[in-house]
Image 1 (cartoon, rainbow, N blue to C red):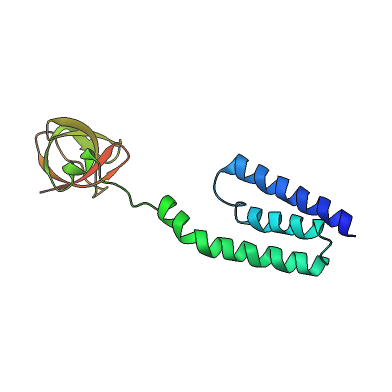
Image 2 (cartoon, rainbow, N blue to C red):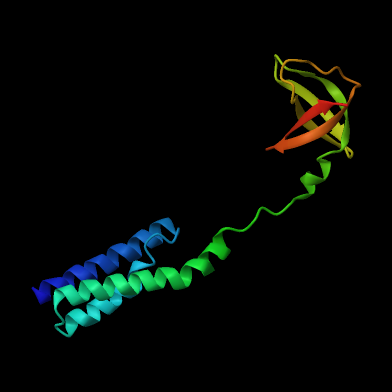
Length: 145
């Protein structure tokens, strides 16, 4: 049984490495240190239940210790971009913003943007002044002033 456990642990380690290599999302990296310890215990002919218990403990400790580090690395706040400068700015409608046809453009801070009205039921004629409410992709959502 112990010889077969060695192969099981090695197989589990290989699967963990492969899963991590394919996804690169830190989904299997937590298992690797525990699996390496279990391999060593298997080589020392330690009983299977102890191997499994130690594997579980090392995996949990690895997750707890490195979890905070990886959260800071992967959960960065969105950094504002230069496009955010247009939020709250007044803009000139250069092409009628049509609610029905989903078309329209505005000029704000010297740049032309595709625009939609936040009030989806009304059109805004060219030459009107509007205020930029939000950005979604490359489109501004505006409101009449």
